[in-house]
Length: 213
Image 1 (tube, helix red, strand yellow):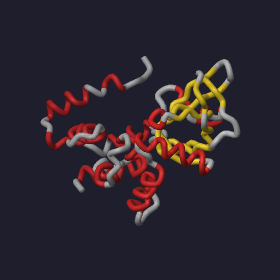
Image 2 (spheres, helix red, strand yellow):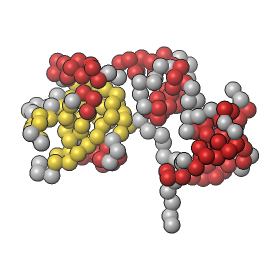
Image 3 (cartoon, one colour):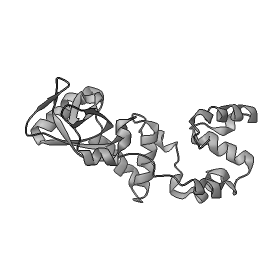
Image 4 (cartoon, helix red, strand yellow):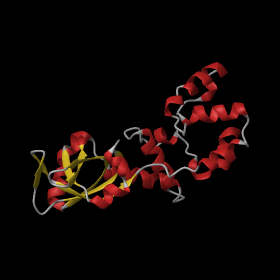
């Protein structure tokens, strides 16, 4: 581990994630931010966390071609928990929130309480652990069967960030180090770029910056 990596870990604590682990632990099948979130969460469990994480993925992640297996578990066991993206649309006519799990061709009714806690499901969708249960009766919404109910949703996303953490940590890094930290944050290796290339890469982040005007 480089001195810069040590400083990042020292001043950012649990916010710091070793991105290389996302590949070493064979999590490439998941979106990068999901893999990094799971790594940071399981590391808190201490020794043996790598094996626990592998088992968690093996137990709950299903490839799109396994969609019939997911449906089979839902109707035979009455429930199934899957790692996937949940997107929610609203049917105004029936006052129903409908979760779309596109990779498995499943529509599921989503309780309002879950939607309220996870409003991003209404906008961009959210990855997480989705517990589906079999409904007592099948509803038809948008002329399609709603064959499941989202009983529980555990989102996989970074904790809320405090801008003060960034402001306080910035003082411990030189300008060159801070640029390297930013480059590494977007998943690139700063040592393979010269200073001009690094600055060009950083300018690509400007559209993602928000603020009051």
